[in-house]
Image (cartoon, rainbow, N blue to C red):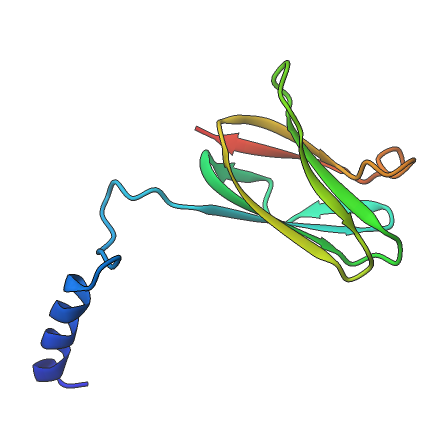
Length: 123
């Protein structure tokens, strides 16, 4: 695209509702994928920034699995993903404060067989 066409297109995009250039104060969203299979739970990254975090759980196993995410802070409430059949997936976007979070499959015996991990959320 030539510069003559690019500038008017950019100006129009900035005037459209809901379109705004990124600024230094814009909150970024973190992403972590949790791969579940017999008998492991593997995070795509073990640390993310505090704020909006998208957690995607994917069941690559042959058995059903679920996912529970809970802050290690006393009195915290767990975030629960529904049970997923093989090749199933679930995704949630949540606001996570800084801290350490335990993740595990809560189906009977699965956590004890190794389906657990820790996610660190940095401030």
